[in-house]
Amino acid sequence: MDKIKALFTASATAVGGRNGHTESDDGVVKADLSVPKAMGGPGKPGTATPEHLFAAGYAACFGGALDYVAKQHKKNAAAARVTAAVSIGPREGGGFGLAVKLHVEDRSLPQAELAAFAREAHEQICPYSHATRGNVNVELDVVGAP
Image (cartoon, rainbow, N blue to C red; front, side, top):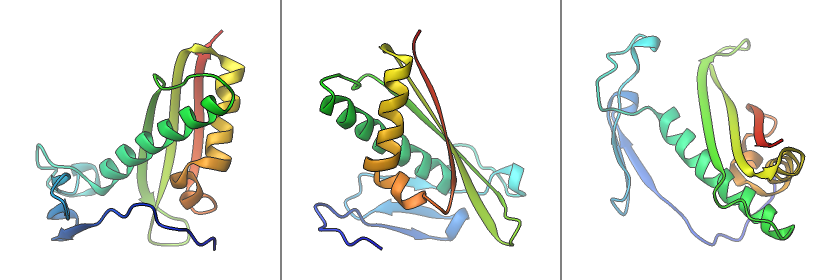
């Protein structure tokens, strides 16, 4: 496992698990949680799931990694739209697992170029991609200019 030199640490506490509340220590992120009806829970309106929070973080982080890679190639991907769809379900080996589909769209960049930037961001830069590698199936779907 690679060691890091921490530049920033975010901390959050959850009480009540999937049917509770989570909040960052600085109060910036606050979310009431409930298990969705699709998973046998109450699916309370206006509540989030851990998968919502993971999807939001991964999409934002990947967008930053993508723009970082583009800038290394003297291009700009700051306007790229990244959507992370995070699914949860039973694993063949027992317990539950996640799967992620990253949809990357930026029609200001040629398709082949954007796809290359997305692969590089996924394989070499994005910490969420590093964290999931070998543990979570992550699929990339890239849409650039024809």
